[in-house]
Image (cartoon, rainbow, N blue to C red; front, side, top):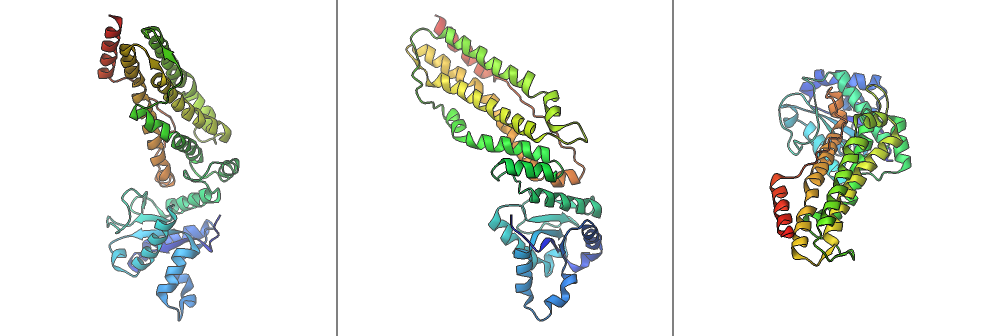
Length: 346
């Protein structure tokens, strides 16, 4: 874990000082090490200020708290921001933590970055959000970082707000990343030969496979991903979750995803002597499409929330920890399958 002299550096225009100072005071009261240039005037004396601030904002602080405003865009603070943005692009992780003072857009700052707003969130809320970011950092835990018993233990120990959600999303995101090649092959309609040969009409085999898929879905919806199992893992409102159970539940999400992939892969990997049987089976394999897309979309939505979790929680936004699974078959595909079975039955 990188060590920094300061937890955060403040970057703002002088005209906005009266709005920023209450945040500074609450950060200090919370034990956060803050780089505030007004506290380091003697240190700056006689130095090249361009080099001084470049080093302070690129090497000495863990995060930069950027207070964006009309004044900010036209002031010395922009040098600080360019330095901070350069480091953020280099390390590919959170570094600039933006706070709006007005609606002025800051050049180079993505609209997708989570932010707080001093018109809505008071100084205490902002300071608390910074404390939560630092707690997550101490756990060395991000959705992109490798998941190990050590990092899970550190996350459970530090317990930043929403740590249960972050842990679950990480398990699911990393698991689906490993399955990405197989997922892509599914939508290409590819599967390696599995050595199974169907010499007959294939109707019995097709029916059996429908039963198997129904069971996979039934177990997922009625047993694994229920409100009761999620409460047992994530805890009731106001109570902490159980790290091992969360990891296990995330693993079951990934396993269910893989089980559906394998179901379709088995169909496509079988060789069919009857051409109509082959056609019906390949339509049947597409039954997995909607299920897989729904699960993948859920995982993507969870990850999007995780990327701005602290900001959302600090802003008082409720986080839905339920994991919706929408299993359905497109009506047009169902009609195509029935037509294929009719041809096979003639």
